[in-house]
Picture 1 (tube, rainbow, N blue to C red):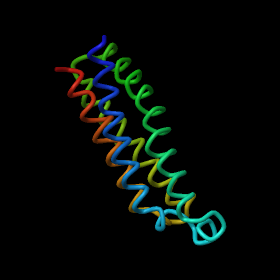
Picture 2 (cartoon, rainbow, N blue to C red; picture 1 turned 180 degrees about the vertical axis):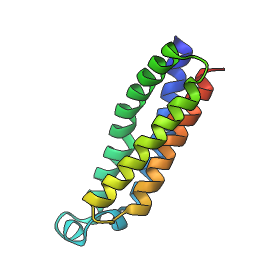
Picture 3 (tube, helix red, strand yellow; picture 1 turned 120 degrees about the vertical axis):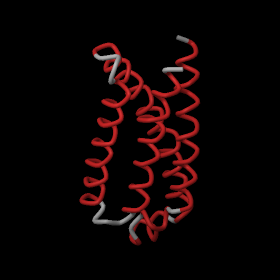
Length: 131
């Protein structure tokens, strides 16, 4: 069990670092001009780093781990494929929702974040856990 926790923490750290770096660099594209004018770019960058680099991996990681264990318990033969399809489907839905909610502002950044999350939690984590 300890190996699984270390793998999960490692994946969460890598995804968190990539997410924090991406959102820090691309805050101007993700935020509206009104938010930048009222709060300042530095405050928005700090908020993005905390939310996307720390909060989201800490929330998504354990949920992904629990869901993968559940799928693995029900059908061990096709668990990786089923889980990857589930993660990809959720990422597509969240990308569409982000495009609608943020009116296409930051679409490339949100798409990249969702791809990183699918690659990390949907593809790499199950591969590392099955070793």
